Length: 255
Picture 1 (cartoon, helix red, strand yellow):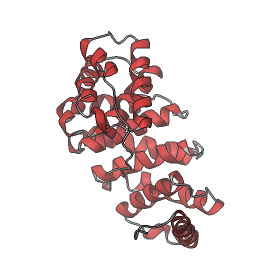
Picture 2 (picture 1 turned 90 degrees about the horizontal axis):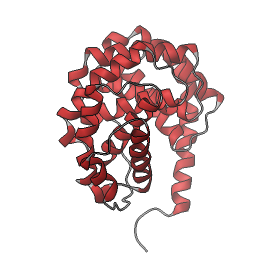
Picture 3 (picture 1 turned 90 degrees about the vertical axis):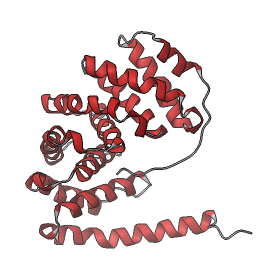
Picture 4 (picture 1 turned 180 degrees about the vertical axis):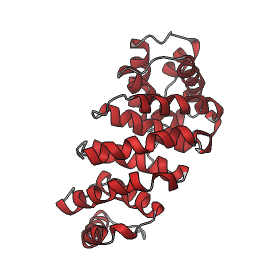
């Protein structure tokens, strides 16, 4: 028998980890005024990731999120690009797992969106993918397509083309899903939008054996939805849809 953990051992480890998180959560509230911007970004990212991995959204966790959100607005000018991407990813992931669109969350999102525009050239490929995925996911869960959100999307689109060769399979799938979702929610198909889609479609063919099952489904949905919203059936689109892809399981945290 190998040295790897059994299913029971992993379950036990997860239970102990969740118990440790439960012990720590009240201290987030108690020390809320002591956290620097990096702490705030790390805490919200961690809570979103834990919930996404099965942690129950307890009253203590909800309270910790509520306590931290106002500090996003207060300290917004001190967040580096990685923190901005992590925060918007975290909020999108929390909302996708049942977090309500409270005034505090809406204000935090509104505070971060202009920072995306201001620091657009500082995000790496994964950050761009995470940001566009997060904005699309927020819209998918009821966030309004505000002028601030549209401006943030418009600021990032040219960088999709510029950094297309740095995108991995997950980033490509997330970006095409995000762009299809945004268009389906009212985003205009601007020249920059069309160029970004055109830049991504050949990339579907390049790492075709690296997409997992969910990414395959998301890509097919995205291409069908883009066509449904007026995307022409270009040779790149036909090639991206026509090549078989094989699932390859993988997880990846945001930058």
